[in-house]
Length: 302
Image (cartoon, rainbow, N blue to C red; front, side, top):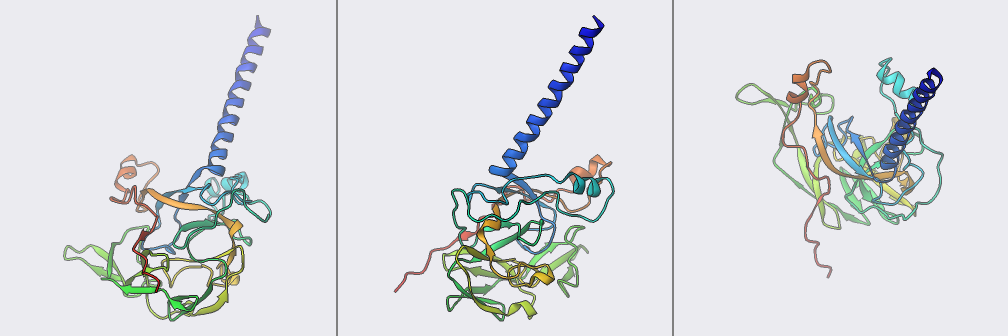
C-alpha cells in the first residue's frame, strides 16, 4: 500500500510539472507568434506614450523573423527581481537571420518594436523612412525624397507631472509650470507631423539640437528608418551606435511587432505591499488608447 501511495504521489507530481511546462510553452508560444505585453521605460515616444504605459504588441503584423521568439533569460530575471541589479533585457535574442516568414513591410507612421543587432534591448519607435527613400533631417524637419514632411505648430501640451513623468529639466528645460491650484504641469511645445501617406501624429520639438540635422541617406533595400516622437530626446536611427542609438536604417528583420493599444498606465506610485496604491496609481483615460496614427486625406497628385 505504501509503495502504491508513493507511486501515486510521484505520478501526481509529474503531472503537475508537465501541466506547468505545457502552460509555460503555451504562454511563450502566444508571446512569440501572436502578441505580447510591453512596458514603456523611457520618454522617447512622448507625448503619445508615457513612462509607465503598458501596451499590446502584435507579433504577426509583419510576419515573423529571428527576433520573434520569446526566450526568457532566467539569470537576468533573477538578477533584476531578486538581486535588484540595474534593469536589463529579460530575453535572449537568436543570432541574426535574413528574411521573414510571410513578411510584410511596415507602413510609414507605424509604431514598432525593434531589437537591433547590437543589443538585446527592445526599442519602440515610429517608422518614418522605407526602402529606397532618400531621407534627410534639416533643422528638425524630415525631408523625404526631396519634399519636407508637413509640420504644424499646435498649442503647447500640458501634461500632469508625476513620479513616472517628472518633466526632467535636462530634457524639458523650463517645462514645469503650475496650475492655479498649485499642481505641477509639464508644458511642452508640440507639432502635428503628417507623412506623405496622410498618417498624422504629435511630436515634441524643444528647439535646436544636434540630432536636428542628419543625412541625407538612401535607405537600403530591406531596411527602415525609425524616429521617436520626442524628437530631441530619442536614441533612434539618427543617433550613432556609440551613443546607444540605432546607428542609421535598420534591417526589417529586427522589427519584432507593431504597437496596437495601451492596456493601462501607472504613474509610478505603486507600492507592492500597499494594495490601496495599486488602484490610486492608475492614470485615468489612457486604457484602450489606440497607437495607430490618424489618417487624413492624401493630397491629389497633379
